[in-house]
Length: 221
Length: 228
Image (cartoon, rainbow over the protein chains, first blue to last red):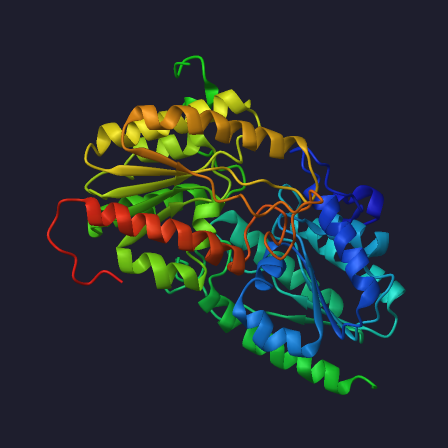
């Protein structure tokens, strides 16, 4: 699927329809922040990445790894793609890039969303040929079974298959089992059935931390 | 401005366009909480309210006051009005209600937004005649000066003038210190130039908490030996 026929793989900035220019402000800040820093790990994605930075778990697990956080709430794959092409990777050389995006790609098929994620993987590889990209699986969402859970699960299966043959990319399913036997997700884990509570972030982040650490250890100093 | 003339005062649920029904799930959970809980304080509004509960400060300062949090990210005055009219005030008798909403009313003018907030305050007073209402002012937003800051400030000015006339309603502006002398807002206070960081929540919560203690003390009830 070419970028032209896949909107999820066609880099686009977010238009400022609200009037305070926050999306572009955040992008510009990420670019300028990156000029002074030498992160070993870069996290990029949507609100699940952005909000992670606001909780204690970031300070405890990821700050010590010299991690930067380029998450923007609401971003879909095409927005992250645009940001990475337009400066956010230009001044840094992280060893590991964690990509977590796709749940906001409303109206796109799983194939399109996978295509968007793979386009991101490709840009990262072009700009940072020595980095390892870790793609995180999309989490289930909604209180009860619904089409978006199926969509996200399909995306995960497609991405997992695509990266299997690539040595510089891996896929990690970070769902610790949020769906209970009755099909429900608890608000103690996702307070709005999409975003994670601190307790849920703990469950997601411990295995993520382990994986990142082992990737860092494998990389040449 | 009557409800017929003010779209911001027309109750409206959020329609599920994404496909996972999250808004209604949250509303239904809040309605259920009204059946199970006996809150002394009710917080209602948008993400500014909802996110507060995700930080330590909620557990430390507001849970001990028997507070419930009915915040929903993205809500406008219309959505909050609908929720309150459709079960989120049933079976509870909070002594104080904290209302924080309006920054997401992108389709409406400052006058309309203020009118929507007033309509919610009026609804609260009519359903909870013994309650006191605290309305929090809309915060400035965006890294640099922009029209939404002006709009939110205009809403606040209108509220400051008109809320006290309704009865036991107070307007509190917690946004005073966020804009620096160069006109910028720091990402240390608002990580995305809209939502508050844990530190900023802590700062504004101190003021709010003190006010809540005062209002709860004033209520003629049995002595609250377990307060804080």
